[in-house]
Length: 376
Image (cartoon, rainbow, N blue to C red; front, side, top):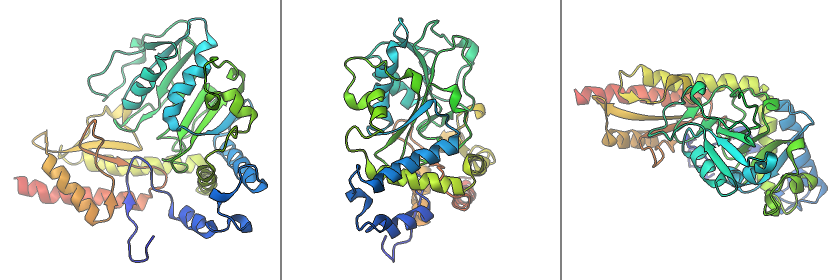
């Protein structure tokens, strides 16, 4: 970072802002990690130095989430999108039905379901939604009696829908969960899941890595056509290093896990997440519909908050553009909504501080005061 360039507050959905403390630590080690004379990116993944990095990363995430020994922890490539294929390839054969139940509540679970259709039968648990603003009551879900697994996305990054409780399924199907955008922002009982996966560029690392937590007794059922890098059995037997892993991303993940522990662990991070989201939702809910959130309050995301700026209930793109310009002037970036939904979006990952969130909430109130008067 240039000395004369102020650091911006990055409210983007990913790659996300990392804590300044972590960045300084990485900067300090950049030219010589652990006094070995090489950058981490230059280390052999077979070296003792890197072995310690990946072992420490696994140890720390196991401690943070209380992951039992009956679960494998894999550091893989291909992002969360790669797991849209890897999950059915490894699990669809668990039951003779070769059917998976998919709860589609937004952009990413929809993509996952479409990809899974290549490998088996996909049962859509709820009808396709015109707009992803809500989750139908579980009593209305159409579940398969003998499903190989049940899949859902805990937090839809684009649409801002978060499922706060783990579904309790009458068919007792193995539960698979994409936690990419709310991973490490709330306490979770790992033992309720068959698989949890999360991409790293939001709450625990940088782009280039996906963390997969999978129950060991489910490993070894991959389809014969499964690419070797997507086969959980192969990756487990090679300590996530069947081929050269994303070494720098694992290194950053290790730093973030250590940082998360020093913040007080998941309990403290969950508390901070709630405080930050309450700041933004308060600005929205107290705006007399100048800011509009269409998500059912019971399913509002704490980490990705899409909203519109409206005059008389009608979204105003000119005002939204002005808001983005004013935010940029105040060194706040990446607040534009996804092209699929438009508007604005605030992403409040663990690297965003409460103080930074307060600055954004204050901007929202100031902007409303000025432009409501102008509109009147």
